Image (cartoon, rainbow, N blue to C red; front, side, top):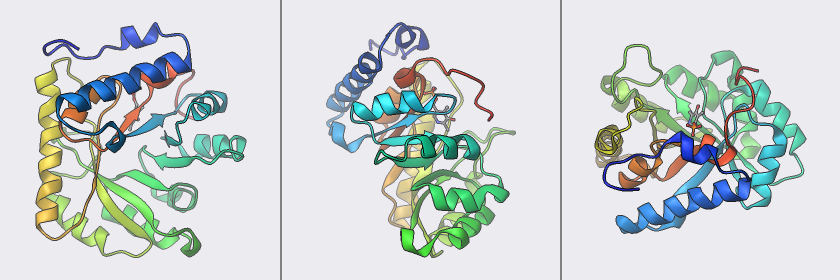
Length: 246
Ligand SMILES: *Cc1c(COP(=O)(O)O)cnc(C)c1O
């Protein structure tokens, strides 16, 4: 990466194998963390596997990736069944309908996209006691876009305090999906803001350790601003194989 040039889809789409794609993502993580004095192992790489077949997940799992993020419950459960022989950690990263919270609470280790206190209550209620607390992140509508998922900046503190008091779930941090931009400076701004919000909540007594931010085209900006989890689809899997709406 040079200057403020950002990562583009085109170059990752030319890589042919899962190994090549993974090597490139890992090299970027090493490169960017080195620039800011962070340790690569503090960035948890989550394969965003929506619209990718179970076989593609299996291929990445064989290369050492254990964390996968899915957006649709039915699609995720099918893949989980097909991959039940593997020791994987499943993250729910999609929009949450309240009638799906029972399945989500039962079949995932993490939920990144909690954007209403009602959903936190449902997840808390449905989490089976023998599975330990479900890790959750609150999704923030960081640029206050009219029709975007995520908590408003005004409601964040109240929801965070309330969610952190619920049994069965453990509030770990914040997640955001900023507007696309091909300018590195512009990409960094909303991520810096999310980090600041996390620090604010921690100064108010919470103990949050997770910033879930960064996708294929803005992962560098996210890592520069302190991401602890990046959710990478296209750069790891190549183009999505079918419409992600199972
Ligand atoms: C699809 C998706 C990603 C990954 O997107 P890419 O641009 O393909 O890396 C990350 N996070 C969420 C919430 C997604 O829906």
